[in-house]
Length: 338
Image (tube, rainbow, N blue to C red; front, side, top):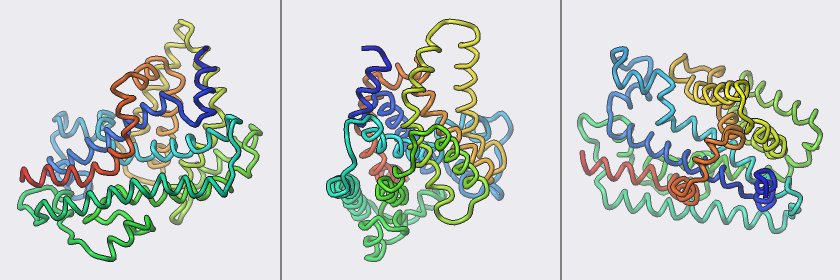
């Protein structure tokens, strides 16, 4: 099979190996992000209070990994945007592939079970870590680590179990705030697919609307929902992206320039909210960078080979679990060291 045929076959089943690898990378970066916040008080202070924290000397390691595109190696929130884009893409793929019709009677129970069951296991793990590991604040520890000293509560447990708007209690599992949105995305998907995405002009209009809401919108949906919708649009553009990948496989200076530009632009945009002022505009550019990361994973041969390697596939198969247990596990490990 050609690369395009193979990818479309995977798409009809709702899986694309390179996207599995990208998901694994995203989970790994979030884990590194939490580890640095737990173990490096100065970086945690810069992250939590950028306007009040002491700025490290220019050229120092702390400065380089916070205020330059090297931030990509621990860009946790930015890779959460990649998770959101991937969620929209992967959920829409079976329908786009034409092999599966979305039947609400079976879709909702199976999708909600796949989301809630791992989340409940993660909550149970977080409770266990809270009981086994002391949650007293440690003098001199990072703010991220000491914020986990929040005591367990029945209210927090309830919100964590139902994955409601207040999910993500520090005492249970901070990652659950994203699960609220992923559940909401899953519930909205069948109604979103009423939009005629097969028309390219409609897809263009949806993309423009998404970025307008990201830049100018207000309210709870204006930042989280657009990346998901953009992922759905990318699902309908997958065949075109595979055609672009095939054209870019030909060796030429122009193709090399375009591929390099895509890679550099992706990394710069995904970190722009750190080395420029943190605003709605830079957050919008981060989401654009997240979309470019998904596109690059499909069209750049070097990225695709990396994401399809055995280590990245291993991570990709466990990304959901790694993401859900990463926060309480990181806290437990570094709190014990403290």
